[in-house]
Amino acid sequence: MKITGYLSEFSLGEIFRFLSQGQKTGRLTIRPMDMGDEISSLPLASEYYTFFHHGNIVTSTTTLDQQELQQLIAKRGWLRIPTIQKISQLCPSKGTLGLCLKTQGALDGEQLKLLFKQQVLTPIPQLFSIKEAWFEFDANYPLPYEEMTGLKAEPMEIALAGLRSLRNWTPLLDKLPLPSSTVISLINRELPYHLNQIEWQVWEHIGDTLSIEQIATTLGRPVVEIQKICFRFMVIGIAEEVAAITTTSDEQPTLRQEVETVPMTGVSHSFLQGLLTFLKGKKNVA
Amino acid sequence: MEIMRIVVTGPVGAGKSSFIRTISEIEAVDTDRKATDETATLKAKTTVAMDFGRLQFGQNVALHLYGTPGQERFDFMWDILIRKAHAFILLVSSHRPQDFRAARRILAFMRHRSKIPMLIGLSHADNPAAWPMEEILVALGYLSPYNRPPTVTVNALEIPSVAQALTALIEAYAQEQMAELNRLNKDAFI
Image (cartoon, rainbow over all chains, first blue to last red; front, side, top):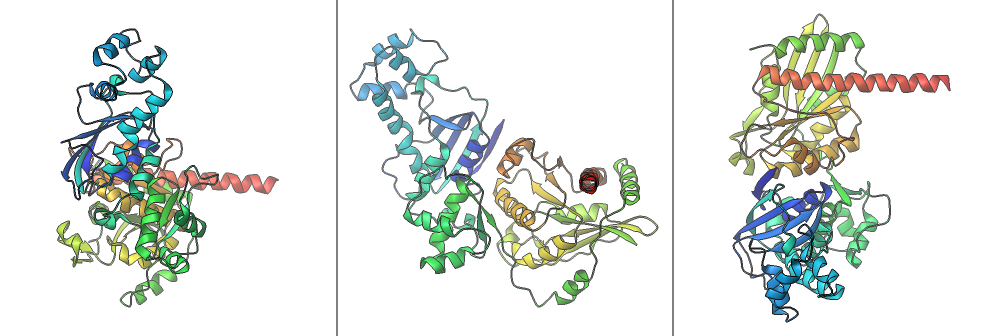
């Protein structure tokens, strides 16, 4: 399965939500077309690859040569590349390089965490600052075990970090929930994510009754700030936007009256049978 | 006269007007007017009021189809339509992921106000850039394969395809009606 698109159409947060909730495995490619403002902690590359396993992020690279993790380890002075390659031959081929090196006593858990931070936790949130990019998700791409530490990260946590640190929201403005909408919670258990203070304040106010505009007024905050926070909630899957009914337009009062007087009753079994028979005839029309 | 009312909804360009026009026996009320904003780049015209179509398949029995306005600023019409509809179809273009957000918004709006049976119709499924059905359903928020509305691909320009989609919706409606009847019978015995 391959799906493609542009971040201007389907934002990175929405892609992460899709891959996480769908428990997808495969390679996400991001090819920037407009980097926007300079992103200092993102290595310069023509394409960024993020690998998912059952919905979790397991590694990320800027090349497909399966050498990046080894180079990271060597740059830190922990092991030389020939040594890494020698050790990796002692491990099963389907195991991650990180776990192999740990099992063989060459690296410890803390070192793997540092590597994972450098690979995933620091750069990937920066991808959210890319202004426009083409993306592709390839579910058939094999996992690069040589690039994997054995650790994994929840995409929603990464997305939350990325959206929190985002400075330029211009590419996302048309994707924000409407000020007149309400936002309702999708979870009835403890929040799986750690919210900051303002996010908590907004979270406590979401529900059926208050619109985003009204929450902003209550909290004394700009509407767009609340919209951004609610967008974050939607991206990480803990809330949903429910659009409001807009004010009645003057041009349709007659129609409203006509439809309002129509009684609402069910439909009989014989009606349904007749309709299905009729539609069956339509299915055979050339 | 016994009438069944079905709402046909979905983002701009999903094929709502075409769907109704294809199956309607009457000249579907063409309420298209020139789009006045950014949707004009998508379509030269966009529905600013409501499409209406009718299928009279026997004496005193008819199916009425109501198309929601393509632009969400006409939500007040949706409110009326939902309250009077027996079922609805959500049409989504398979090749336009930028429309999945609008589709989710429509779904949340409808689910929040009505429990009527629904069907998802995926249009343009033959487009090279079309997402697979399973992926679209996940993108729309239907994560579990056991908790999803019936979903079909549909060509809004072809009579057999539109008829197939309506058949699937009517069958879903009939099933829910039967389930409701069983629930009522069970309550009567308790």
